[in-house]
Amino acid sequence: MKKLMALIAVFAMLSLGASYDSVAQEETATTANQENVEQTTENADQTAVTEGEDDLDEIESTSFHAQVKRKFIEGGADFMSFVILALIFGLAIAIERVIYLNLSSTNTKKLLAAVEEALNTGGVDAAKEVCRNKRGPVASIFYQGLDRFDQGIEVVEKSIISYGSVQMGLLEKGLSWLSLFIALAPMLGFMGTVIGMISAFDQIQAAGDINPTVVAGGIKVALITTVSGLIVAMILQVFYNYCVSKVDTIVNKMEDASVSLLDIIVDHNAKK
Image (cartoon, rainbow, N blue to C red; front, side, top):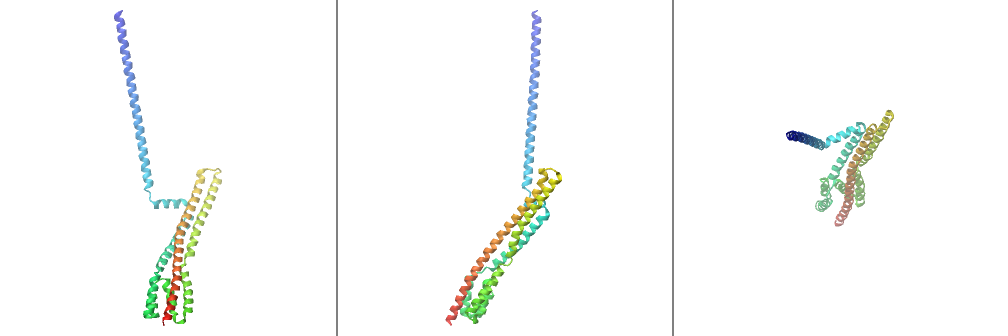
């Protein structure tokens, strides 16, 4: 009986040991599977992050020219072409005016000193030669006044005033066209906005339902054309204000120099 009980006890211990080993193996397998799943998930997350970083780098590496080209196509070539033409013509006029106005700027103090010295040493012809060799509206006004030196101070003054008005017109030449393109660019953008909204409503009517995907295309065209027109207007407005400021500066110098020239002529006549 004791031997039988001992055998049962040994059998029970072996069974418990086998069950423990099985449970341990299952826990080990489960732990290994969890570690594999976690590793796979981590690798997938790293791969997704890497792909996201690559996509971000690709987006950031896109050139400004390519982005502008894409927006131009998305905005629609019909109205965007008119906006771009307004920018091109406006910039052409603005650059020409900037170059002309900068070339028209003159150091009036040096010119007055040179004219006065030439007038005192070589007479009217020498003073006219100095003005002939100088560029700019101030020198041209001086030449016209000195050319009528023998006709009296009143004739010289009228000549300076009349030719000053001519030079002022030349300085302001083209600014009206520049202001036209400044006003025209946003108008073209707003027209594109209206056309885009009409297209969006036509698509809604055709679909019979207000679908954001259907409406987005027309609204996108409307917004792109509006923004483009406003950007063009702002760029041209900067050039316009610069040109107007430059014209005002040159005109003020012309008027001040003209008065100084009349004083020089009066003093020269008084010395005779």
